Image (tube, rainbow, N blue to C red):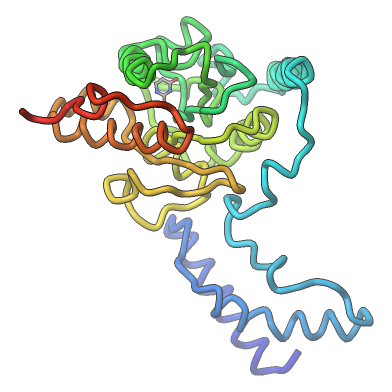
Length: 286
Ligand code: URA
């Protein structure tokens, strides 16, 4: 590698490390810049290994959302999906618990619904109510989510609902309330959500709120207010980002309710579900 290139690489690494120390987790870099940086390395690897097949495409896989299509993994029968889910649940239950988890005594909140679901909802983490019941979205936000699901004509048994985190984040020193998951918690729990998605192979995922959407996409170039309603993709599965039901509970405006409903109508259309005139008019001011 040329001296100038090594210097440039060192400087880039130093700069990124200084950002990391300041708590920055993501930087926007164009694929062209990444390609320019890795090009000499690829050339060197290629020449020293007699023309290796490494391509810049493979090296710069920019985020987990761009990984191999979920639909390329093996298609399972319903029975095999159930047993794969049971196995995954057992695997999570037998994980060595962190001291925080041991101290909080939180219960596993794995997921609920049918493994044959076309539609999957992803939230951020269980709260107090979910921890008590061992089931996602059973508190106030969950009741609202059920109303939204029922408004589409579906119900809890026809979809699959899971969170990125499988245990309620601890809240040391607090007797009530919930805590937003930390980035490191999202990173360590995401692989389990990923496996749930691979087992179900849903046709569509609805990402509920910024944390869930960021978990799925691996990064977020803009806030949920701008991203909602705009199709994204997680390894070829279309993802509809929308507001978290807790946000709807805090912000009761018709405009926000309508936005979520419009997001859901986009989902219904993509799933070829019928939408009645009455449904089209929900939350429209007369
Ligand atoms: N909020 C979430 O994100 N998930 C739940 O299960 C409950 C509330």
